[in-house]
Image (cartoon, rainbow, N blue to C red; front, side, top):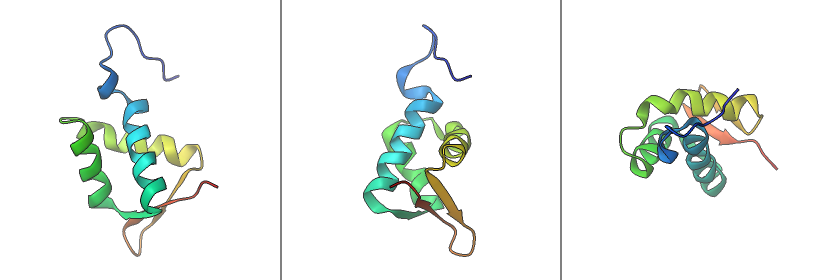
Length: 78
């Protein structure tokens, strides 16, 4: 379960990182892996360790698809 506590910094959580990634994906619809990782780094310095869990959360929710031939993520929401 993803539950923040009083010691969690708001910008250093999986939910916050997922929000940044989702906003970027909704704006561009498809974005290369490196550019998506850079967008997260710009939004919150030092949060690159949250990239994989954030993408995994979005994938589990059915909001993102990965295209391995083009090495990009695509927004799959409505």
